[in-house]
Length: 268
Image (tube, rainbow, N blue to C red):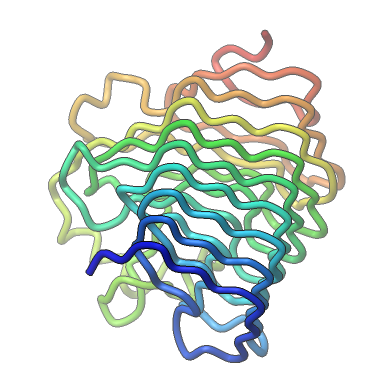
């Protein structure tokens, strides 16, 4: 069902058993929303949204999964002045599609704070899906004890527990899951394009600066660059035990960043 002209204001949600909001709509607004889950339970996304002309502002999230996952076939999104604590970060994710026309575009995350999250700026998919993620801006980001500041992983969406799509705690911790064999069911590899992504004005602490996992073995047309036009400006990560790691041909430029990114081009 496709909805339009929906506004949520001044709400507090406690201990949702699953997603707090899961909506695909046009002209969708969230303002002054607080979601809280005891501990960090899995599959408790806060704003799981898609569609067109979406605004999320002045909110606080404490959940054990994606803070703000932006879904497929979505454009014109602005997220600002939101704090994400625990769980994962602000995410663009292409999921469950073999249509190469699938897209996520013109998305801005700005003036956000991430506290004890697995990621801050996050883009993910799986090699069995198709589509393009483009024109995404992460700007004015504060990190407080984040595990990984920046993450682009085209093989980074978990398959879930008991063979279902979702989040497997073992996978979240980087431990091979008993469900890893599910990947054998997805033999047809397609291509996700990630392009024109900007990271600007990051500061704070993270264990790992980031990764750009843009190489998918055996993907169709895999000789082409899957991550291109990546821009980083004034991204300064403190306390990182490791810097950036690139897999595949990652094309990007950077200025005034520490640690130094791993792009094929690393300066203006």
